[in-house]
Length: 126
Image (cartoon, rainbow, N blue to C red; front, top):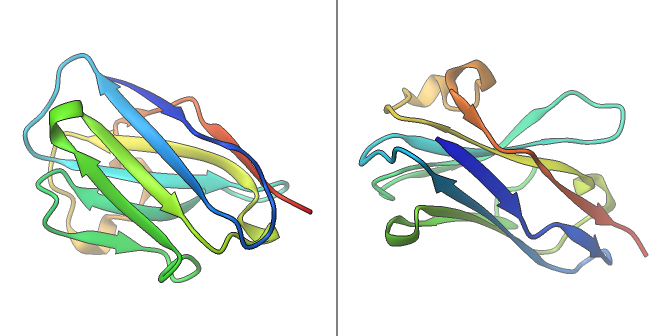
């Protein structure tokens, strides 16, 4: 499985961006996909995750109410819609995937994910 993240860029505080993560290669009908980010001088952290069934989504507290994760199973693509962006959201955003259901208590754990995209840079600045 290969993941290709795109959609990053420069945006002003309060603005919006939509990231995409396209999966290619062997696909899976079940599993979990997530977004993580690594800001300047920070460790990589969990942002959001979605069951491939699309039934449930999960968010880090820092992005709840501002970010929305969704997927288009026909296109094998997961999206991250980011609204009300803040300078603290500046980071390289990575998508990740695993062809199995992760229990909720582990969904934010990076080592649970088998496949990673290359990252796309989001810069929030005036």
